Length: 633
Image 1: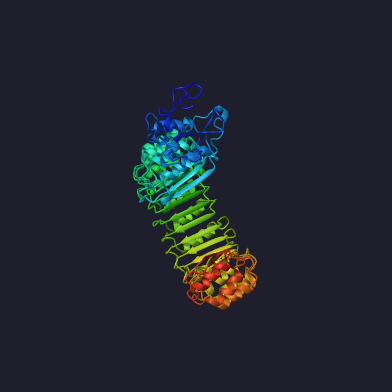
Image 2: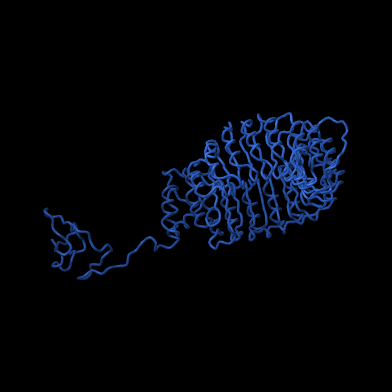
């Protein structure tokens, strides 16, 4: 048999030149004409060269030895789905090759269904933060999401300190593998430049929202690419990007006809030309404009006032070069007829004249917030209120020239329409006794918030009680000058029933106030915050337990409550109580644990932070018992 050289078995002559050695490799079976290998596993698993008397081992050849060009041709012929995901897990090299294969480069047999497996819906959302934000993870996302609906939203929050963070390579992988991407947010990614965002623009032409926050290496080149490739862009937010300037914004305005919202903050390269380019080209669709910490001048506000015919939400913060003339010109442009929400902060150009012009030129304003406007006085505030017939929500913060007279004049002027009034850190308001004329009460005001206005005292609160009988939400924070005598008339005058009461930091209030709230508003009270009211103790908890059956949120942190009050609270019918805060209550001890366990049947949140008389072992047992409750300790 070893001398057989016929073509039926081995056409190349004798299989072994030395037949004597044949029995080392082959063994005859029981049937003539067949041969069988040895039953034992061969010790050598590599190819052999039998040209000589003894074999010679050749080096092993694997697919990894192929160059990238060949592997690319192989991998692009894989069907979209599990096969591609499995191949991506072979090595980092395969993963990066697969992630850089675009949809147009995938070669699929028509019998396999064409592009049906490639997801274009774009409903999947992914967020990468900190150390998890790497190119490898982005490549994996690009490969894995294609067959399960397509990536629709991607947020990357880096830290600008990681050496292995996201780079252009990772974004280019998303651009190749995620054509359905509609929303992209980049935060603190200094290693990403124009090349990566250009890759996104080229591959993700369905992009509708783009957020760039603290991306110092991204420039106008990226925005121009987005403008040219992504005509569906409707929301743009750029913050702390010093290399972004007028050219990029002008391209966006010219080539993105669907742009509805734009926010530009702290971009030193942006000037009047960029803002003008945005507004003049998108005047019919742009509804929200936010400008903050920019070096723009009065010209930008004039453009807004002339071209902002669709703007209904306008935010202007920290514009040091804008003067009174800019606000006056903006308001007299007569384009802001649809404006409903206006926020102005840290703008020295806001004066009485400018504010009155805003009231006249923007007649449909419902929400108005003014922050840190040092030249605004009572006259400007009242003039604005008279000229703005639709005003419903007014917030004043650090407007120190507004006094008590302007405050009450505002209530008289807007008494039939104003629903929400907020004052924060307005030091010009002083608690003085004034005689008010006989007027109809402010029947529309349902929410009143006075925070950290040290001059706000009992006299002002007593007058408010007479003027505002429909209050439902009352927030009085950090008013150390008010006592029971001032707040009781306000609480007792509410005919609609109080729903939320926040008395945080009102250190001179006593149990008498809480008892009044519990007795008068037990059927409506939902939230009660007494944090820092040092004179409020167990009597208040007993009144709450007896009356407030619909209360869901109670905060008695830093109050004078003890274990007795907690026990009384547990004996009440507080079946709706979901959140209880007892932080820094020095008199609450381990004796309160049984009561807390009983209250915990309905609680979803319990704050016992810095309760020093609750030892650690007791807290651990409480955590084990209230395993469905989120406990902060």
